[in-house]
Amino acid sequence: MDKIQRDLLEQVAGIHEVPEGAYSLRINGKLHGKNSSENISIVTKEDKPGIDIYIKAGTKNESVHIPVILSSTGLKELVYNDFHIGEDCDVTIVAGCGIHNGGSEESEHSGIHSFYLSKNAKCKYIEKHYGEGDGNGKNLMNPTTYVELAEGSRMEMETAQIKGIDSTKRVTTGKVMKNATLIVHEKIMTHGEQYAETEFEVDLCGDGAGTHVISRSVAKGRSSQKFISRILGNAVCTGHTECDAIIMDDATVSAIPEILAHHPEASLIHEAAIGKIAGEQLIKLMTLGLTEKEAEEEIVNGFLR
Image (cartoon, one colour):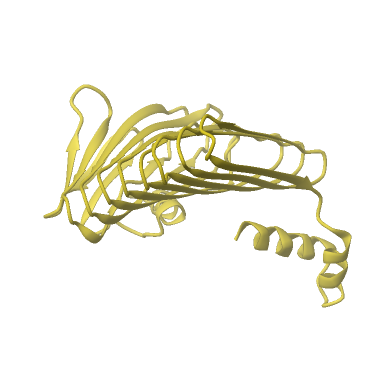
């Protein structure tokens, strides 16, 4: 890896080099390296780009790193990754994609990730998207995630897109069975002419199923964002979706929450709030010696933390 690729790897996965344990590293459209561990098997797909990850039942306190790096302009790829997580597991999966586009062509990464959690399994999934470049080419990312949670399982997703992505459409769908839980935390910041669209749809299919979806975003410049959430309550279940956005400059933000109860004891809540930074917040920080710009940055950073 060169310096640009190592820097991208640190941004999206928090590591400086090839990690220990189970990992799959993809650079510029090709598999750069992969490694399985005693409890985690990573198999390259034969029919299309991507990998299958198999985690043995009972595996705990282990992690898998699957970052993707693009540092060549004009490169476009579609990757399929499937995760099969055994019963009673407790694991962390660190994904993410970093793009450095130094040319005039578009660079694009689209990933389709499918998660199948067995009974009583737990998984934390961390996905960061980051873009940069010194040319005129655009950075595009379109992640699609499908989650299927068996009885008593739990999945927590943390997704972040804070810088450098010109256009993205993120689609997440889930099917949550009896006493299973899906939690999603999303953070997005757009600026310039960037566009970001997020769509969540969760089916609560068993008694005791639950989901909690939280999106926090900041829109600057002339950028635009759209947040769509849909929760279907098909049993004695609980669902909550929340979208909070700060709008600045000439940006636009749209929030479209929808909840559908198909059972009389489904408890579903949706919330959406869009607004500018409060003047009293700015004044308070400026009295401590910050400039207006510094105060804005401090508030935005705290909001997205």
